[in-house]
Length: 83
Image (cartoon, rainbow, N blue to C red; front, side, top):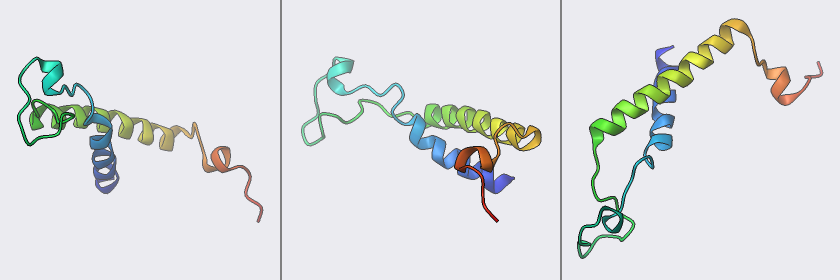
């Protein structure tokens, strides 16, 4: 279960990274020469880790609940499997 949670966490990082990103222009500060104009003005690893943990834990809880209660099974996703 820990390995599956780590996978959920790693994939959730990519979902969370764009949240709240503001460029220098959007933040109203001067652009630093040598950086991309689309580069984030500030990066807070703490915020990313907290948000990622919340998203990953929520998705993992749904995954475990689906495993326990069988809301969606493989047959519903790919169709019936012929023997």
